[in-house]
Length: 259
Length: 71
Image (cartoon, rainbow over all chains, first blue to last red; front, side, top):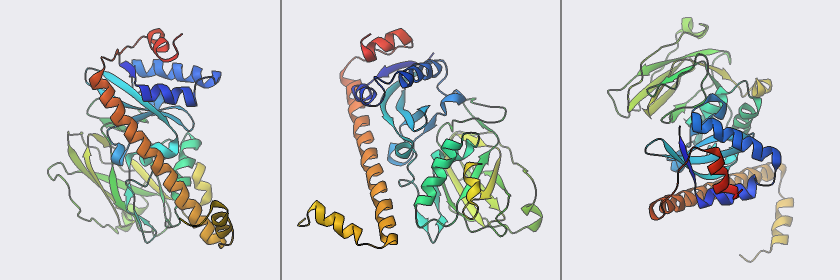
């Protein structure tokens, strides 16, 4: 069981944002019960924050309400704050946009995109991307599964990206705006790299969801190549391994946003 | 800043739609950034609290409820 401590800042946030709202309070205690049993229970959609807040994690209480906490040694966690999706899924820290091309995206974004059965989160993410006038192309990334060194595995979907999975990516407009495949390469031998891999193999363009699978390694860096959209994704210091993605062009198809 | 809030609002109103959208986006980002700064500051305070006090960690919901709501 995970032991929890509420810091003074959390108590303040609780009083301000949850206390007195019966339904929310009930939800909070139910979620806390789940958290103490397993902080990475998929229902919590636990994930690491990005950028300057990368020491922190969050889990979902309700739409637009997340508990922000940090892990402590000996299976303990300190609850520190309560934030909205905007606050915890901020793109500003890790993302920069150049010429309408996303060059950075954090684990939170993957998290959101992956929850395709939860239109709220997906809509949020893409709403954020669209809010930036500089973004012309965005991709929905669908995870079909994930496993981590810590054993947070799932048959089809997991919601926690254990250990953080920040990526830098550059995506050009895909040729056809259709479904494309992503391969992941274990690049554990190189700590950080910025090499580019470009593929224009027509044969791979319409392949379904061929996936590369690798066993995760601590502190490994992962390189993913988007094929054939001439996009490159670099993962570093990731402790989790993602075994499957699909990408889909979003920018030109508004109806994709809630799919 | 010599401009009053009222004159600022008037200036914004006189902007083009595109400029207003850009301003809206800038303000939204600025507000989120401010909030994230607060979260970071709260994190530092919480860590300090952890070091100075003897926090009581628990996995008992009733104990946690008591520590949070006093009930």
